Image: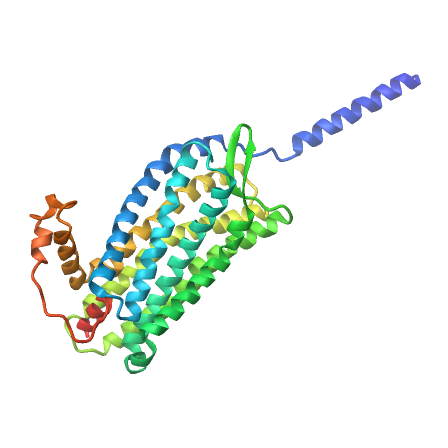
Length: 360
């Protein structure tokens, strides 16, 4: 064997080894089908959530300003919850268009819309948590609540809550960016250094602040409320218990699937789970469960208002006052049923607290 043959053999072995290494390397997971699915599935759902959330929460704000006059801590929390949901749903038209096509609104709006979305998300969760604490104080510590549940404290705690929501949403403002890849413009969170660490921390932040802490506080508050109601000899207490059960179940049902999928995505980022098929399924799941979680902002007016008889009366009065836009609704049985004026209590309280107090 001459030196030329040896060189050729060595070169062949090198080529073979490189080919073997290339074939053994994990291939990028193709996700073109997921983007096409999102473009078909997300825009109509985002549009529906936007319309329902905008209408329901706008009605809540109108009723609070026109009839309730913001005279209690609970009214302040309800107003802020409605504003949080409005802030959240106002970002959905942008995400709907983005899902259908690509991001065409520029870097500035990419950062602002991402930030508004996160501020609305976190503030909404935080105010649901505050309302649970408010109910807990009103029912379990009724005497103490007379001093603690004042309008001033409601405004102060609301300002602190908004500050916290803005603070924890800052990464969305700082790291959201526009970039073009394969002739498609994206608006995504992109970390320049330690991207895996930042992604994991971001996912944990959503899970801890968006589910674990709020759910723990809600379960504690409502379990104590139910225990207190059990000692009350009143036939209407079951109504309050059912409403509490509805609040917890709806929160769990709409937010838990999204947080579970987000946790699994974190395991993918950490390479604990390495399977292309699983990654694709998780991407489909994140789109479905995220949209399901969005629906919860439409249900907040129903949960915290429409279950109250007083608010239904206010809705009837509001629609009759606005006969121009709602001319077709003036003969609705709904409005006629709750059109009768009822004497208001000398102690102004929120609709939900009024129902809970009736249950006692």
